[in-house]
Amino acid sequence: MAKYQTNTRNAAAPAQTNVTTTYKTMVEVKAATATLCRGQIYEVNVGADGAPNATDCQIIYDWSRCTVAGSGVASTPNPLNPADVASRSAVQINLTSEGTVTASSSVLELGLNQRASQRWIAAPGSELVWPATNANGIVARALSPTYAAPVMINEYWDDL
Image (cartoon, rainbow, N blue to C red; front, side, top):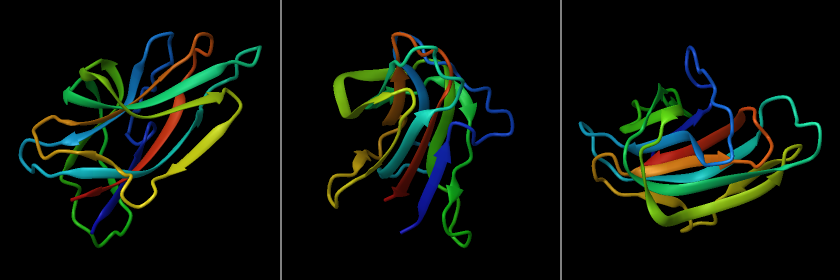
């Protein structure tokens, strides 16, 4: 099974998005129209990617289900094995307009200090799965009451 990776800097001109007091989508991985397939995120790494706030503050990271794509920077997923085919999933990073996030659909949430980073690896059977339905997928979002710089979100997934 092919495995892929992307992050919030994975584009020629990533134009990173600053965190605000409401959720901003930083990475969107979803089923693509032409190559519908299910997928599953099995690992994420997150942390602040800008100058820290003068006082320690929190950043909340959230992975939720989406049904309509937003607008952002196209990101070409990197196959972890260069012999694998291109990913059949569609990826955008640093979204400038939000898509439709399903209400109460959070499948993972992490709260961190701005000076901390975190790695999450799914226990077998606990991967974050999306269906083979056009534009359905998982969005990685962040918010903070006081941190107002970019964050780094790095995701690994399988196309099923």
